[in-house]
Image 1 (cartoon, helix red, strand yellow):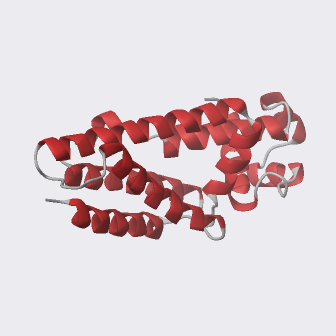
Image 2 (tube, rainbow, N blue to C red):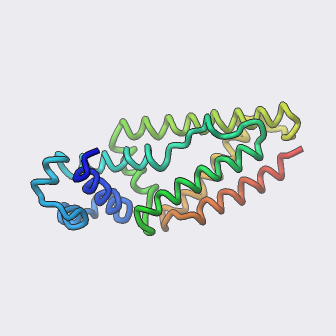
Image 3 (tube, rainbow, N blue to C red):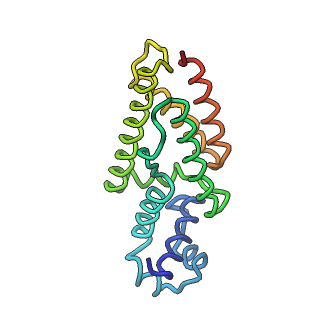
Length: 194
C-alpha cells in the first residue's frame, strides 16, 4: 500500500473508531493525517470511501480469526487458542489508540456497505463452524457431557462473546473485554465438561 494512502487510512480509521462516521470531519482527517486536501482526494474519492476502506481494514487485520490454525481436538484447547488469538488482535488494535469503539464502526459499516456485511457474515459462519467442530470433538473424546447439541453449545459460547462485546458499545474495547469473555467461556466449559 502507498505510504501516503496508508497514513490517511490509519488516521481516518483512528478517528472513525473514536468518534464514529458522522462526527468525523474532513478537517479532522486532514489534520490527523498531516495531508493536504488534494492529497486526500488523490487517494480517496470522499470521506465515505475512506470509511469503507477503514472498515475493511479493521475486519481483515484485526477481526478475522484463522480458525483452521486453532486446536480443535479438545474444547479446552480450542477455547485457550481462540482467547490467545483474540488477545493478539486486541493488542494489535491498541496500536490504533486506547479509546476505540470497534462495534460502532463495524455496525455502521455493515448496515450501509453490503461487502462489509458479507465479510462479517462469513466470519460469523466460520466462527460457528469452528466452535461446532471443537464441541463435536469434545463429545467424541468424552470431554463434554451435555444434553445440548454441539450447535446449541456453539451458540451459547458465541452469545457470551457477543454479549460482552456489545457492552463495549457504551465504552471502549480493550484487553479486559477478552479477559471477561475468557472467564465466562471457562465457566461454561466447567458446566459442560464430563
